[in-house]
Every structure is written in C-alpha cells, then in structure tokens.
Length: 311
Image 1 (cartoon, rainbow, N blue to C red):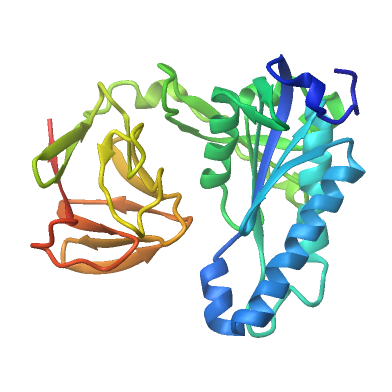
Image 2 (spheres, rainbow, N blue to C red; image 1 turned 45 degrees about the horizontal axis):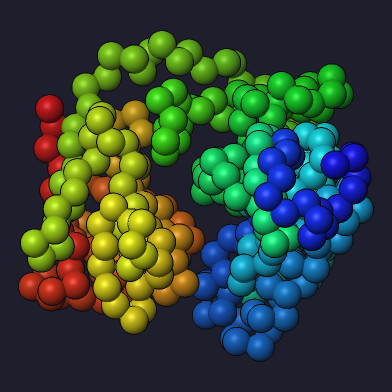
C-alpha cells in the first residue's frame, strides 16, 4: 500500500504496518442527561463529522464509527498526529462545544504497528494497543506509544513528552506512554522522563473475581482479565444487557483498574460506595461487586464479587 492510499477490498488478508487512531467523545452519557436525546445525538454526530473530516484531510481512512467513537488508520505516524491534533483543535475552538450547558471534549489514542486487512476492517494486537491508549487519555488529550514516537518526524518528536507507563494485555513488557502536545502553549511545560526502574520492585497484589461457580484472578502472572458474554472473555457472564467484551480489569503499578468498554455500562459497588461507568475507568480497592449493564444486589446471580489481597 502506498502512502495516502485508502484501504480497499483487494487488500483482504494482507498484513501491513499502519498508524491506528481511536477518538471518542468524553462523557457522552452526561451529554444526553444535560442536553436531552435529540441535542446530544446531534452534538455527538457533529463530533463524529469533525473526526471523519480530520481523518480524510490527513491521508487517513475511517475504518468504522461506533456510537461516539471513530477508528481510523493512516500510512504514517505524522498523519495520525496531524489528524488527532486537528480533531482536538476543531472541537476546542468550536464555540458550540465549549462552555454552555455541557462542555464537549474528546480524547484520542494512537499506535503504530502491523495489522491484518480484512473486509475493509483491520485486526491485530496493534489495534488493541491503540484502543488502550484512548482509555489512558484524559479529556482533550492525545496519548500514544514509544513505537509511534519512533516513527515521527523531528518536528513532531519535539511535541511529545513521556508521562507514564502501563501494562498491555498479551505483552510481557510495559508500554511507555507519551502525551502529544497539540496546543502550542503546552510546549513550555515539558515533564521529565519517567524512570521505569523505580516500579520494578513494587509488591504486587491479587484481585479475585467470582460469579456463581466461576472464578478468575488478576495478579503478576495474569495482569489483565476480560469480562463479558463473549466466549473469548476470561470471565463469561450471560445476560441480555451484557456486551460481548463488556469490561476489563488491569493491574498497573499495584493498582487494579476497571475499564468499561460496553454499550450499557458497569455498576460498581466498592467499599460501600456505588458508581456507574460507561467508557470510563475506576480504581478498585478492598472488596465489592459489579453489575454488568444493570444495577444488581449483592446476592444477585449476576453479581460479580471481587476481593483484593496484598501479597
């Protein structure tokens, strides 16, 4: 595939290296609560249009849109960051999105690596890593990996800063995270490089998940566990409101983080506090239970109980 050439049907089954970008609207559930269904739908749709236009303006291909999220691919790392930067600027500079009843922001994550092209879609570990970067991003942030940074031109390399490290499913080594400084004023506040060695000897704990007679654990041996009704999930829970891949729990620097990836969200009952997540994350502590797609009681057969113990 030549730079700038869109993905076509004849590329089916071919493996190629690309930059992959995910972008989504932050807190879309709150938008529907604040603006009402019609205005919120139009607002999210406008954001999707901005993301699509930015992709096309920078030699990219929109692979798919999923509710409030866009997945795109690009021939080069620079193209991906140019598109992500344009998305952020277009949203932040739009007076209809800033302030008012509900402030609208997006978050962007991207990675560079090999993917398999099939039926105008792309698959592979690089896609999952790119999506993982989006979940690491805060509102108005662009987060990427050391691999993509290594593919950047010198101009773009001067606009990224190393900010953190994170575990990635299926990889033995942690991923170094970089923030892309798409706002000019951010370039004056560069942070020092993260010392990866200082986490090497941290004491890791163990989180055990249990639903009826099924049990899985998250620890130093298995740092990520997926939950959902799909047969590939580590903990399979069946229910009409449960997504195939509903949520995942990851061990990061001795913290257990729950990431919701579902349509209907996750209810979290943790140490006496109740919260609701949709396309968001929260740290789990002590013990508690989860409800996938709907609120549950502690003795419900669909309640997923968890307990954390230090080693």
